[in-house]
Image (cartoon, rainbow, N blue to C red):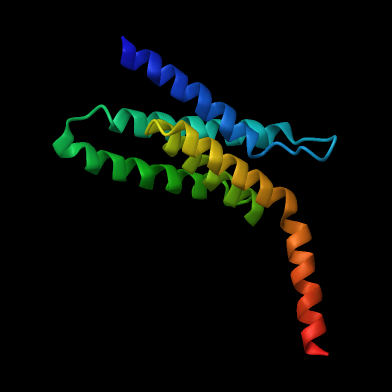
Length: 138
């Protein structure tokens, strides 16, 4: 019974963190579909890895590896028409789901914060790098 309660908490954390990395804090307009897709991808990866962890120790690695390949393959197939930024965010959402499924909640929080910060300041960082490159060329 305790494992079932822990699995429910893992699912809730995976859904929350998966949706959080696709949420835009600066803009008034959020794409709700992308937030839902990101949450569902995180849920999918968390549930597959959580299921793989229930197998006996001698075959758990095989099922965990197959789950990782399944998750990444599913993301790449379903997001083939999306832009590269959305695909990368979806892959990070899956990674967060996998981290949460292993019970590493604090690591998932840290990883989510890092992704949000990089996503928020990536344009500023890239613009500053372009200015430095142009100055060096002259």
